[in-house]
Length: 223
Image 1: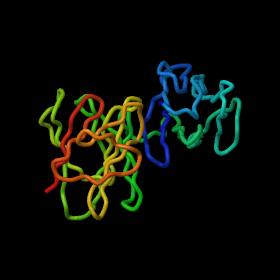
Image 2: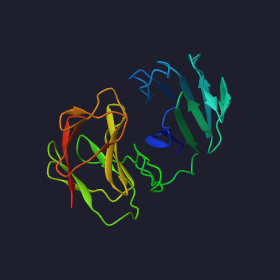
Image 3: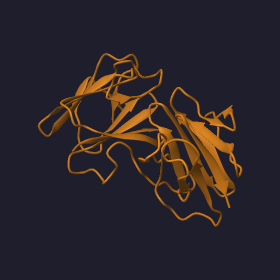
Image 4: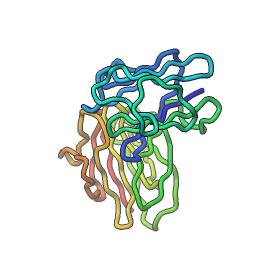
């Protein structure tokens, strides 16, 4: 079935299947696709599905809705189309064309030279995910300290691994040649590193550092 893949600055935030006749998109929490950003109107746009066709309609948003670089009011979507809302990009993947993604989030690799977020589902309140790539000799992992998955340890074998809950709080851990860094990706509730808020600027991680977000504590372990 059709899917929408949401990203910002080439960082994949979430992936949503279009299962209803109407799928709303906006900043307000009651939308089907929530984008928590002031550039996005409370009720920004709607995706209408009729048979095998999907139409994008702008709901008189403040900053407009763009399809493949052009402002639109209502337009039928084709596989691979790129919707732009503020700094966010939403790729439309047509029915039968989608990769085998998780039902609610995306797993995607990125070359080591430029970071990317890679969400996936986990059993804990905060999800941990990514896509494996070869990168360097050092090893590290994230150990879940609280919640239903306390004690679980996830190796950081990806270029970028995101942790958290999309729409609530998401942080990204990026693997670099000199080590690992963490930065805030989205959500109103900033994650913390050893009790201090994590901002958008990357912060270097050290062995034993404790990250907390979405009600879950995780420890960075490097060997």
